[in-house]
Image 1: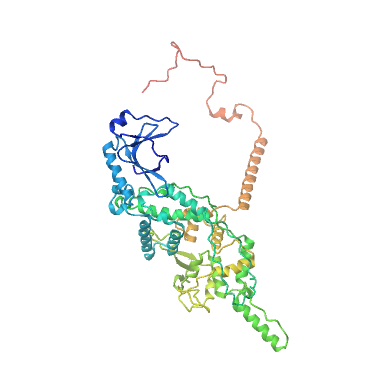
Image 2 (image 1 turned 90 degrees about the vertical axis):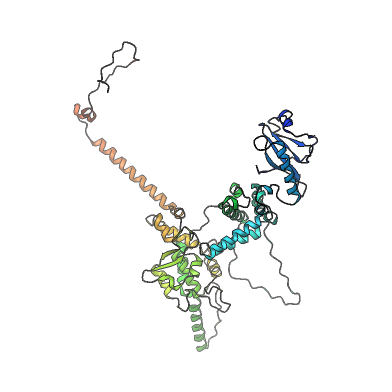
Length: 538
């Protein structure tokens, strides 16, 4: 047995000559109220046995840890695994390992694996993930998120812990630590006293709503990352598991989360958003063209006119078209930002995008998904100049992005949703809305919805095939009315049908054989009772 358990904090008052004879004759079985009783050896300090109420005797070693705590390392059970002499020798080796700073049971595994810590496991795992990213079988953003969680959320004591000593309590404590941790304070801005302080301009954009407490969710995501790491090790051969025996994270109870995190735009919100993104007055080129005409006209007529400033909700034409394309197609924001001209098939109105969010595994052959482009989406694409390989290339006064295409749509969307008063709507909610629209009653089925949205699993499509509350009520009422009308019609038909006289009036009597209307009760068969002959048994 290689399980670490908490030992009793009180020191033993009496020592005993531990031997096979002593264990067979002088051991007292504790009662159920005591649960367990310790007997420590006279020769080796800390070595002893733990006797349970069931009669099981277990050898072990108790030693002090930094900080004053005591740990009880289980060696094995008496008679089944160890005799007293072999257990005493094992206890001496364990005390030597602890004195050298090694895991207590380091000698039971290979020397190179006994020294492995959780940090070594993480480095090997991240190297494997980097190879998957280079081969196109995993998204790079996912690996970046894992590395950030490992660097920020996992403390150094847990990183430096030996893999053979890992336990469920380590990960339970990590979950509580991240959940109850305080938010990081931003560094205060140090102002130069000699510098002139100007009054801050009040931004016209509405302030963001205060974010909800995401620490419990962040704790869950960190434990998911560690579970993937330990699961990767457990999938390797036994001699390459670095001393790990099981995935301890699977036994941890996670923090409760809200299952439905998506926001579905209502019909009114969709109309408002579509009108805003399609209106040329909300685009920078058209707005400035009208403003210049008004200024020239005022100057020609020698009129005084106050020059207007560009409102905050006015967007660059490219940003407005990118947001509009996200809304019309249901594509993810990074799929629209990284869209290429060679991925568009104008003859078949199809767009080919890489499948790196839910698929692209070694067992998946289809690494791309095809999205059907409607006439409105094609019209948006026709407005874009073909000056680059990207549909939305990076440009502007600032430095171009390293990727060559636009890399930030969030700032533009913040101004739009502040103007339209949509504080809880994200860009990714366009995709939720498109999926819900396609899954309306009379829309696409599971397989068609899965293919249209590019999901690898049909379980994701089933989440969107929910009936709207109004349609559900209407459908239930319609079915109830039809059933009520059918029953009323059947009842009216039965009452209008005249009863026929005679034996023929009863249809059952005309079909079924005649039976005795008053059958005599059949009692218990006794000896001498005559039974009618039913034929010769075969």
